[in-house]
Image (tube, rainbow over all chains, first blue to last red; front, side):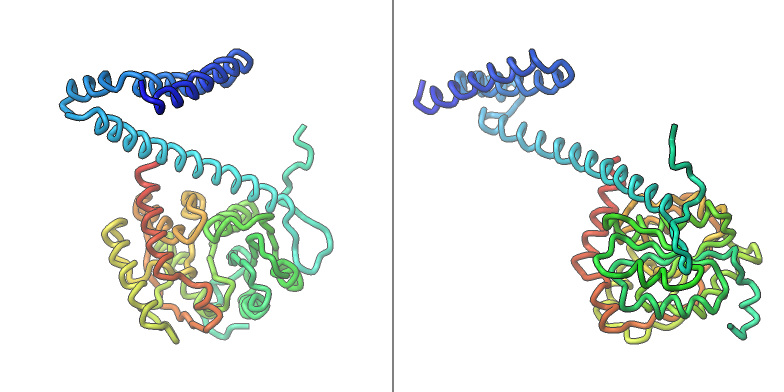
Length: 125
Length: 235
């Protein structure tokens, strides 16, 4: 193993331990934490045994293991970009609805001094 | 008061929605021109930093809604339309707050709706006149027209014109989800997909140095096109 492999695998091992410890504490976020753990584990394995990655690449008709990793990263990047753009637009729509609701509730008419909404109750309960 | 016989189609059931962002300097003139029509008016101050809302509140009877943050013109229009519908609007007219449009054009937009000939009327500066339009803006708008013809399949002559009118049913069906300037194309998309009856009406758009400052740049038009494309593939 090279110095790079020792360094990165050591770092990934620590990261994995920290993630697993966090997963044990936070039940609600466990799914995403486990996905991250799987990612770090796969990265550590790929760095420790690069010929395995090459083997997978050959199996899929991609000659070099590095190309296999590159294609995977590009696809992941595109997928996550779409995912976060979708999340962003949904969040923007939610904020807009909140702003809209409040502005209508606090509608005012020129020439009068008090706010006058469309009859929506101030008290939801 | 307007002298035109068209003014008979105007009453308080016609609501003019004016989205305004930092229009404190120009809004008063716009509202004064609208007041002569005897319609209901709602100004949506889209999170302005200046006194836009205060200027609007000086006008007797004008409704003022205030977005606490800037959401975009499309969002402001939808807010105004929701409000107008909740107060029983029969016809809703959208009208820019920057003084580009002429209030005198509104009765011509409302008339075909009142006569139940169409559900939506779209103002067209290319059927009417575009005073002081720079060549670059003309070119950009012409490209936008062709883009819309391809994407929406609507044979319109003007696409990003802020003056248009809807009957109550059309206004209730159309839902503007694109907050920024893409809403103009989105509205046309929905007019097409909802199979609403529409026609174009000649209007006059007056360009001034200040209105051009806030208008669409070439870069913005690319952003609009890319956002429309993304909206179609990502939900």
